[in-house]
Image (cartoon, rainbow, N blue to C red; front, side):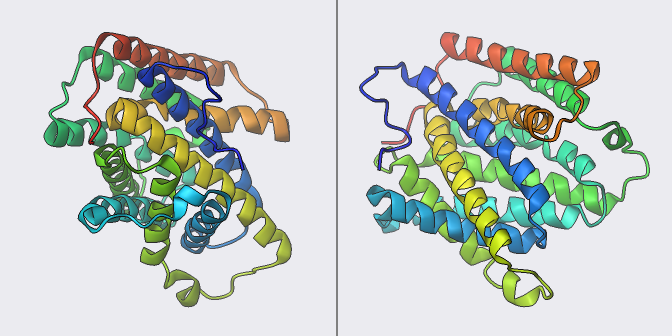
Length: 302
C-alpha cells in the first residue's frame, strides 16, 4: 500500500511539509467529532477500542509500523502512550460533569501547556507570534463553539479540572512526539503509541457493562480507528519537524474542520459568529506559519 506520508518524489521544505502534515491531521481529527455522533459507546470504552484497532490497522497496512522500538527509547513511547490514554480518559470523565462543548473549550489549554513544556525540555523561545497565535486561535475556537458552551459560570469544578488535565496529558503526548529519534517512521510511532494507550485502558471494556457491540457500531469503529490512526501518523510527522508548540497551535483547525463537516453532512447552519471564528483560527495558522519561516524550531532528535 502507498505510504500516507510519501511525497511522491516532490521535494518540500521540511518546515513546510511539517506544517502541511499537521494541517492534514487536524482535518482527519475533525472527522472524529462527526463519527462520534453515530457511535453509542461509553467514551472510555470507545477510546480503548479505537486505540487498539488503530494499532492493528496500521500494523496490517504498513510493514514499517511493526518494527519494535529499541529499549532505550521505550520511555519516550510510554510517555506518548500515557499522554494519549490520559487525554482520552480524562476528557471522558470531564463530560460526566460538564457539557461536551465546555469540556472542549477547556481542552484548548493544550497549546499553553505545550509552550511551557517545550520551553523546559527543548529550551524553545516563546515568541510574540506564538503568544499571538494562541490568543487568536482561542478566541476563534470560542466563537466556533455553540453558544451553550460560553456559560462557564456554574460549571462543575470537577469537570473543568478533568478537561484541563486532559489538555495537560495531550501536551505530554506531543512533547514526547517531538523527542522521538528520527529513525522511527511516523506510522511506527503512531502504531506503538496506540498499542500503549490501548493497554493502559485495556480494563475498560471489561469493567463498563451494558455496551452494544453491534456490527454497524463495529464498522464505524473501524472507520474511526483508521482515520485516527492516519491522523496520528501525520501529527507525529509534523510535530517532529516543527515542534510541539507550533503543531498544537495548528491543531486549532480541528474544531473548524468539525464545523465545516457538520455543515456539509448534516446541513447545520454556519452563523456569522462561526465565520469570524473560522477567520481567526485560519489567521492563527498563517501567523504561526509566518513565524516558522523566520525562526528555527527545536532540532530533531537523531
